[in-house]
Each structure stands twice: as C-alpha cells, then as structure tokens.
Length: 335
Image 1 (tube, one colour):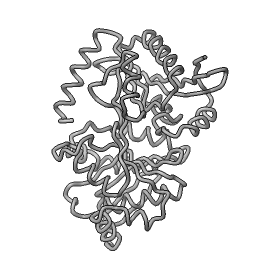
Image 2 (cartoon, helix red, strand yellow; image 1 turned 90 degrees about the vertical axis):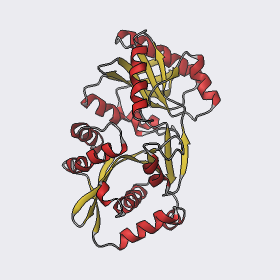
Image 3 (spheres, rainbow, N blue to C red; image 1 turned 45 degrees about the horizontal axis):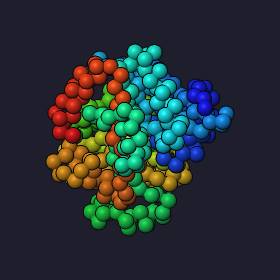
C-alpha cells in the first residue's frame, strides 16, 4: 500500500469518474480554486498492489482561530485504505503545525459509517463546512415528467413566470456577471443569516471552472431589473446549485422558479442525470434559518440525501478553544 501525490489532471479526473458518490469539491478544479485563494493543497492517490484505488483532495486551512487540514466531501474508501489515509493525514498535520484534522465525508448517514470514524478517534465537528443534508433531483426523465412531479404550487408559479413577458432569464459565462450576482447576493446573505463570500472568492471559482466550461451564472430579470441569480457548477454528470441570490422586494414575482427550470434544462442539455440543489435544513423545524429556502428547493421534486456529520480529529488541546468558538457561532446562527 502506498500514498503519493498525483500531479496529472487526466489521471485524477478519470479516476473520479469511477466514484458513484462524489461532488465537485473533490475535482481537480476545486483544488485549483483553493490554490488561487492562497491555500496549500495536496492531491493524494491511494495505491493498493500498485493500482490506484482511491483519491482525495486535502486543503490546509489557516484561519485566525486555528490551522487545520480539511478534506472536503471525501468519497467512501475501503477500511484498510482509509486507515492508511488517516495515518498520512496525522503525519502531514504535524508537519504543517495543524491542531486538528477535519473531514466532511459524503458517506451515507448510518451507524456503521459513524462507527468507522468513532473507532478511529474522530468526533462530530461543532459546525459543518459543506452540506451534510442535500436535496437532489433525477433529471434523466423527460421535462413533462419533471413538471408533473413538482409540487403543485411550484409548477403553477413556473407556468405563470413563463407567460410573463416582464420576466427574462439569461445564462452567462462571463466573469463580469459575477459582480451582478454579488449585488443581490448580499441581500440574500442578510435575509438567511449565513456567512457570504466576497466577489473575489466567487470570481476565482468562476476562473477555476470556466476553462473546462463547468460553470455558468443564471440571471433573472423582472422589468429589466436583476432580481434573482444562481451560480451552477456542472461536474461529471451532476449540476450543482452552488450559490443563489434574490431580492426580497420581488419575492411574490416567481423569477427564481423559472430560473431554476432553465438551469435544469441546461443541465439536461449537457448530459447531466442529477440536479443537486445543495444544502437544505436538517430538520422540518419551520423556524430554521433555511426553512423557506429548503421548501423552495423541495418543491421541484426529488429526494433527500443525508451524510454523516463533519468529523474532527483533535491533535492539540488548542482544538478545544476552536471548538468553543465554532459552537458559539453555530448557536448564534440558530443552526
């Protein structure tokens, strides 16, 4: 068994095609994006009997409160290889003076998978870095069936928007339109009480994925004013509704509903089989900050996916200071 870095994009991307469970957060271009943001990364290949058997991206996060190693949406890895991988992460963490390791697995939420991490000394992280509960839609079916399976209200609003000549949906691959997105994104951040990203962050994402035509910005206009927008990532057969924004003063105008349908139609054109609406509220609590957004996403039909919670492996007593800070932040945000 051997673990070594992979420097060939084709080898990395071709191997990821073999994974059924994966997201763009393990893609080569997500690694490039993190390098653009100034982070140190490693792309590890896990070899068994000299054959590549698993891959995983690792990112060094240097925050004011702590330095840690982060593994985003790691796919399922067989136990023997996973044990070796965690051993490698511990060595690397000590070399990089990281005080803990954080893994966000896309492993099904069940007792067996939770036990794997618990037996290795991991514990539930106080916050999540990426979605642990997502909403997905099978878009391999014909468009008429997609419409039929939507919530009645969602279907009605889409049809009303389609008949409204004042509603225009545009798709853009221009980096300049990230600024337009961000102009209304700030309003959404305040309304839904989450930490938003600055324009430079979003522009770097666009640059990282645009070279492979894996990203688009959808813009929804009402009477000439931009009122809704979404950034969609297309990766290996799945489209991801990664960022969304809308103006509250036009919430009764169903621009966002038609915009999502246009994004789904574009995903179908590109051969995607799944449309991933990204994160939803983990509970049915109507007071959850994401309750309204979750209801919007679920109205298009689909199914819920639950992954095990983000996992931390403490390497220093200073981890607990970070734990308290993050736990307090989660409580303030009512998550």
